[in-house]
Length: 143
View 1: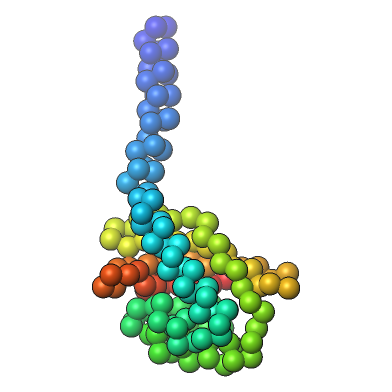
View 2 (view 1 turned 180 degrees about the vertical axis):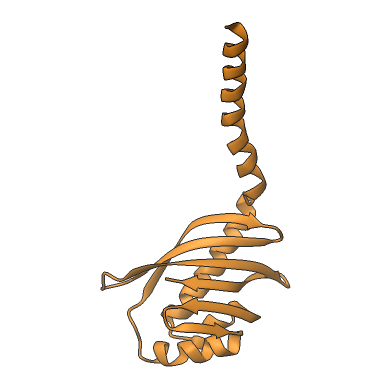
């Protein structure tokens, strides 16, 4: 009986400890989270200035963006995708970072966007990689 109770307690302790270890290796430092937030702010500002070139500059040269409109690869194609959209002056957007986790040397960021003056809201999952002294998007999935 005591052996069963001891086994149950050890099992319970392990079940509480394992998620903690799993979270530690995937977390990013507060400094990196702040860097990603700063890059996201620049991305948001470019969108709200209707500047397709500055918006696309937040992507790596060979980035891929998947959205309901299809696939765009490379920052030039991404700029070409957004140029007519931003030229039409869509409602301004607010970007909000929801979650950040490490994926090897990259960072996965999940954020939501909200169109001002409309009820439109969506989410984006991005993979950021270091590009020189900043972070840029290597892959984005826009929903």
